[in-house]
Amino acid sequence: MDWTVRRPRAADIDPHQLVQAMVDAGWRPYGGREGFYARLMWPGESHPRGRTTLVALDPAAQDFEPMLDAVLHELIDAADLGQHADAVLTALATAQAVDPHTATDLDEAMHTCWLEGNWRWMTGKMTTPAREAAVAAVLRYDRSMEKDPADWLDRSTLAWWEN
Image (cartoon, rainbow, N blue to C red; front, side):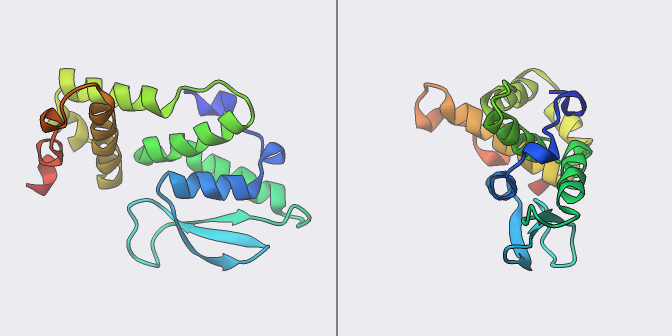
């Protein structure tokens, strides 16, 4: 999905819905100020001084829309987070009755890349958080297929960098 073209508008976003979509996609709440802003740690970050994002919560605040717009730009520019950022943008677009690709479409695309492509080479070009997202997508799609659970893929066959 080209989110630079179909990006949700800050004025149309419920900030609490944005925070929930980010948490659902892997961001972790890390402080903030109730009623004013939420601070979320990016997926894959483990240190409190790692990358965080502030989401304005008070629509009456003067910088409310610019702060939400900045979060949307961060998500669009987060190519290294692939599915995480896309999942948030997809959730927001869905809430606005836009018809984006579904998470299942993205999972199937990653599964096809694993099945038909050079998985080690492709994931070798990714950051660790992006690799984790790719592995999670392949495993989700694999488990959604109608087959015996004994035939499901094992994480160790996908996460070559852990071996």
